[in-house]
Image (cartoon, rainbow, N blue to C red; front, side):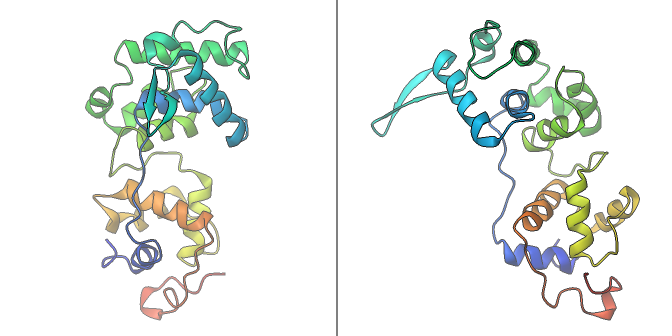
Length: 218
């Protein structure tokens, strides 16, 4: 991919060995989406830890006591007032996620059978999981390596515009055209663009060549 697309090649050299880290399961990704929505990551992590201590399995690791995130059959029993830091609405949505997991609707195998687009639509039927978080579940927990969902996250389009020297964020059609050399790892490359953009990665000398036809980044 880096040989076919010099921009991606430069990002790979700037972030060697970078690969998307997946959630343990689509179920845990969906639950995290409910917990973290409209809340700072630090506070969301604290709520998640509290849930794990309340309902999760306890185990010892290197002399430390840890708690796993609750399995669906435990989370589905969560009482409205039983989770500090969660509204009754979020508790109900977590129970809905747990119930979906118990029926197999969030199994990786099931989502792979559906394919990325249909899986994306199916996940959005769970209350509390809109387009952004459904994409998180499908792309960052189910392991689709070559998927590109619509709508694309605006941040990714902004970063792509900077890296490719575009005057404005590309349309989805333009982005799809840019992504042609990325197959069969479109998901991985999209994550790389997001990560590199968030880290403010510079692209010295990559976009200056007239043979690329993309111009110099603003």
